[in-house]
Image (cartoon, rainbow, N blue to C red; front, side):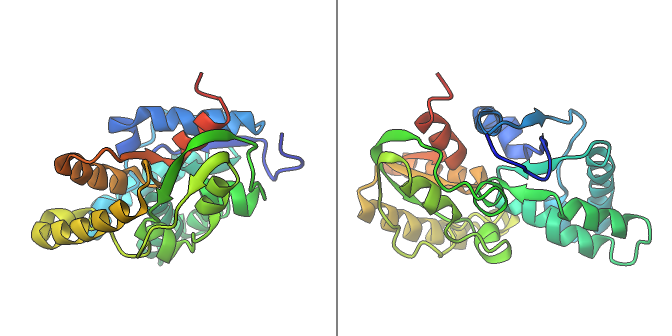
Length: 252
């Protein structure tokens, strides 16, 4: 139980990929937040944050999605937590670009940003939680996704939480700050370069002899997981929310 948080309630913005492909990760986030004493809400009408449209230069479409989510999330108070650095970056930084001259939505974006966090950012920076008292055997390494690392400044949050898990051996990933090659539209438009970057990342993963490659964005994990599977590697990929949930015995 967290003492005296700013809000007692959390709105989970689950992201498109978690919703469509990794719903168990979304449930892990819910269980972790409830474990810490929060009331968790899931606004059913939430949709894409608009990042793909924004990156593609289709800003009118991005604004439509952003307005919808801003208005939806403004209906109740509380923290807004996302299991993704890239979507958090979109909402806390790029929404401001979309509505820079908008007298109505500009102030709404500022209010949204003040209560919006990526999961590990929320736990470590906002709540000051660095040890969830979990226990788990295994050898893991961690890949920091680019948006979280470079745009949100997420450097030690995830590794701090992993290193606190009793029985879990954490092995640093060589060239951890190098992109895995996914990059959303980048992997589609520049597939050959993306593939070369992926192979470099997977070579570094293999050097750790880790059993599990942990990340905080399922997009990167899906990309790297596909590459590992194609190689016939036994290394598994897992979102940090799932790892912490297992360590705390919350998914039993």
